[in-house]
Image 1 (cartoon, one colour):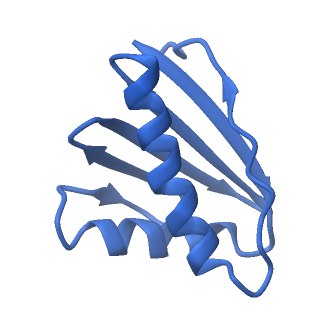
Image 2 (image 1 turned 30 degrees about the vertical axis):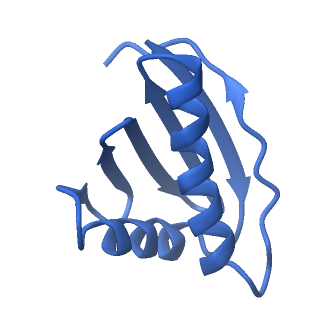
Length: 99
C-alpha cells in the first residue's frame, strides 16, 4: 500500500473538510464529522483531519499510479473550493500510521 500526506494551513480547515466530504458524498460512501472524514474512491482512499488552522489530507492506494490519481482528485476539488485563498498543497510520501 502506498501512502502520502499533505498538510495545509488555512483558517477554513473545517469548512474545506466538510465541503469536500459533502461533495463526494453525492456519489461515494463518505463518512465525516466536522473534524474527520474518509472518502473511499474506487482507486484508493483519502482521510481528512481538521484541527485549528490545519487540514491534513492522507491518501492511500495500492500502487503509486493510483496514489497520484487520489491526490489529484482531492487536490483539484480543494483548489476549486478554496479559490478565494488558494492553498499550497504539497504531497509527501508517508508510512502507514498505526491505528
